[in-house]
Amino acid sequence: MSIEKPPDSMNKRHYARRMLPLTLSVSGGASVAGLARQAIQFALALTLFMFSGNAMANNREHQQIALVGTWTHIPDAPAVQKPAHPSEGLYRLAVNGDGTLTLLDVIKMKSPSWIVTSRDGRFAYVTNEENAGTVTALAIDKDGAVRVQNTVSSAGRQPTHATLSPDGKFLFVANYSVAKGGAGVTVLPIGGDGKLGERVQHFPFTPGSGAVQGRQEGGHAHSTTFSLDGQYLYAADLGGDKLRAYRYRSGNAQPLQADASRDVAFAPGAGPRHMAFSPEGEYAYVITEMASEIEVFAVSDHRLTRQGKVKLNGGQDSAEAKSGGAIILSPSGRYLIATNRGADNHLLVLKIGEDGLPDVPTRYEAGGIEPRALAFDAGGNHLYVTNVFTNTVMLFDFDDEKGELQARGQATTVSTPTDIKFFN
Image (cartoon, rainbow, N blue to C red; front, side):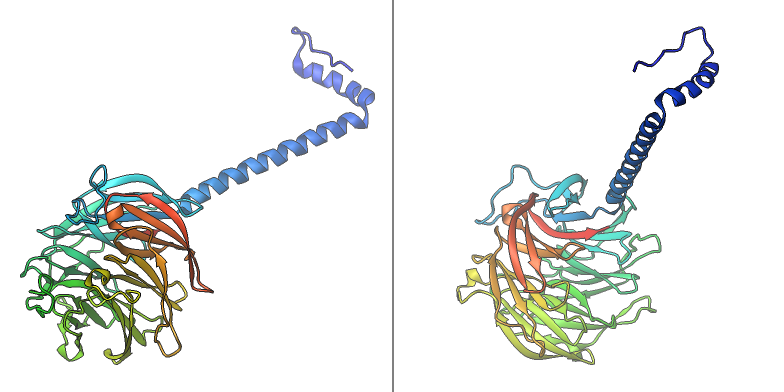
């Protein structure tokens, strides 16, 4: 049935009133049903559109952001695969649903090799690993944008690691220093706006053990780690074969007090590098670089008592196959995950027993050369590995029930990536 078109000269409102009874009388219930169906379809379409829009906005709002730190110089090492272009600084990437990473932008700066984020996710701090060491404070906006707040001296050379005090008042920087004389721990105060102040304390690491020629002529601070209760800070001195202990007093302007009675000595040439605590803080795990081992300690009254150790080099005894790197806990705290670099380049997953001792490690190829840093995303299902010499961040799925890794391939390519952290 054709529909009559209203004459141009007719008043549309009058026409509508005139035609409505005719429409109802001629079309009857079918016309009403058709109109009802159209109305329902329109309402459903509108609802789906609004839901889709809200979901997309919600996804954008809660999308994880990754920061990848780098060396902006290309290392002079035989295993290095030179990138097409040197790194330009700190890379900001979006985390996709499948775990891969998409580049958003780069914050240009010199060698932001290590990243630490504040507990509330509003700020981040990076060590600029250069001869004249500096540390840069960053503000992170709600939308994930990153801006530089300020940069201060690290009071040392080649700062390679940093950690925040649990109360967020201070940043503790480990100056590695390739040359003798620039190593040690520096304490930087943090303002309410997240900016860094000038140093308030500095502890030089001067003597080395001398056990490994070319590596231990002087001290080398490689990391700083807080006890679980936040009362003690431990600094790994790779050059001195020692873990140095400091009592933390948050109310003091100079918050650290050295406590040599709680220092831990390692075998000559071991090279303590990084440290992790068990979820309850009753055990500590220290990875050694040159010995390529994880040493296990029981913790009581902030004193560390050696319990045992596990080799990481898969039975290879050459010095080239011994290069312990990163160590972290799995999200559940039931597994240790570590890296061994050098000629080996493997990831190792170790189940922690009830006595705190790790089991025999399961080894996985790192998918590149020089796996320096490890990190889980917020969900804890994806593990990321920065392979410095092959310019890749590799992605692994992790089964925390079984303690198994599944290689997924490249998450992204970045020139000389040294660290990765997540926020939002």
